[in-house]
Structures are given as C-alpha cells and as structure tokens.
Length: 171
Image (cartoon, rainbow, N blue to C red):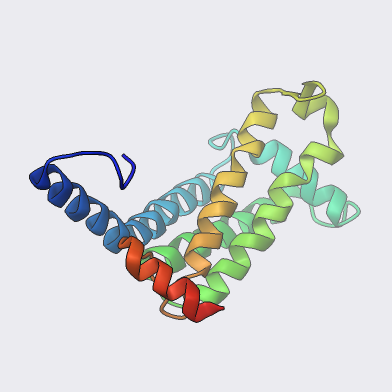
C-alpha cells in the first residue's frame, strides 16, 4: 500500500499499528528465529549422519586445513561454533562476537560453491540441491547484517516522517 493511496482512516490506523509492531518486534523475532536455526543445525552436527551438510562441511574444512583436521575433530568444532552462534542469538548477549562468528561461518558455508563445483552446480546458474542449500545462506547473511545494525541500539523506524528526519540527521 502506497502512502498516497486512498484508504479509510480505520484501515490506515490499523496498517500503521501493524507496521509499527513489525518494526518494534521484527529484529527480535529475526534474532530468535536465526538463533533457533543455528542451535538446531549445530546440534545435529554432533551426531553422525543426522546433518545433510556434514560431509560437505567436513570436506570443506579438510581443504581449508590442508587435510590437517579430520572430520572426527572438525565436525564437533563446527557443531560447537554453530551452537555458540545460536546461543548468542537466543540470549542476545555478546552480539558483536556472535555476529563475527556468524559471518566467519557464513564465509565457510559459501566455499563449497567454488571448492566442489561438481557437487554444487548442475550447470552455470543451476545449483544442485546442495548448492541451493548453500545459496540460501545469503538470507542468513542479510539477517546478520540487519541484526548488526542494532548492536549499538539502532532500531527499525516504521514512521516515514521519523525515518526521513533520521536520514537528514545522518547526512
């Protein structure tokens, strides 16, 4: 709905309340949802054959460490790393550290696209299921960027006039 569209005052007020609620609660909902995903997927990596990503993750870490870290070590380390991210997001504590871990981990998740093209691409711009699983991480990266914008107290501004004022102040 555009601001200049003719709508009744009750619809406009309801829309403003809904958008304000989303602005107030969206970042926390995003942080909690992301925390659940990281904790859940990380926890699965502690148990062999439960994570569909474990073999690709182990191969990637093996390449990164020139074969010096076997899966028996790398997968529990990765599981702990992801669980730490999840717990940091769920608690909202140490967010700078948590987001640093998240972004570092996301770099690692994208590497199989280059390291193992036969496993991640059918054709150029046609990813395999594993490739799709990896590419969706750009959504997680974007979520991390938004959360990073709030670590110093930043907020999502629902009111267009307040957002314009904030934009002018920023300049």
